[in-house]
Length: 292
View 1 (cartoon, rainbow, N blue to C red):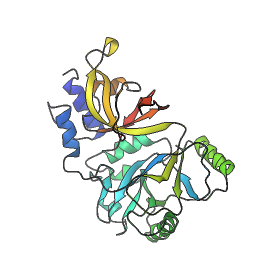
View 2: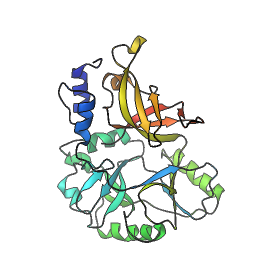
View 3: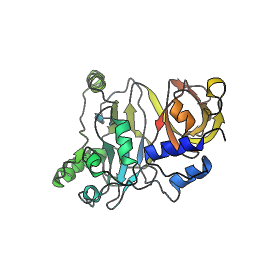
């Protein structure tokens, strides 16, 4: 194996992830997701740059960690439970919620360091907010569900529980102004949700994200050794995206990530410019390890 085990253990400790001593790769990846059942979630597609916002509700896209509250347990998108303090989850309503754990624009890495800990740090959690944008499996169109969020969240009187503000925009010019405003402030982009859309799990044409660059998730299938200055460590990841397309992902990885790469079976997020005729991402670049 070309990855030194001591450096793998160091990164696992820094990220608060469970390690499997002496067994990197597949075994460690299996340990991360063993027994986890992903919750049903609506997932966004990419918005066309010329989309007309009429008929949509628009909100800021928070650069946070997706979290599903089923009324009793807070879970990551993978289905693994979030190790949140009892005082945090005890203040959440019995109503299932969908939202993002967030600690401010441009602070994703700091957020990940908090939520990946197996033992929650009370002081660090007090800087987090759970920003709610939908009610999973609730009946009615999204506009009605969004109004219910605006009623349910304030009723909890819990400052760590927030509402993702939704607004209607009149035309493409108004959308462009709002988009530019969010980006100037350090935000990630916008989310557009059809006002009349019923809740349905899976990738949805009724839920779109508008960002300066495309991104997507992929499952790590294999570690390929590097050459030259990357000899004896990771050269690239073989990944498979949601469309079932497999490709190599080598750009964007730091020296630390090459020395201790994402485990086999883990989910990574990558950016890309566009797709080839065969659906392969062009100029794909590793962005980050997704939440557990």
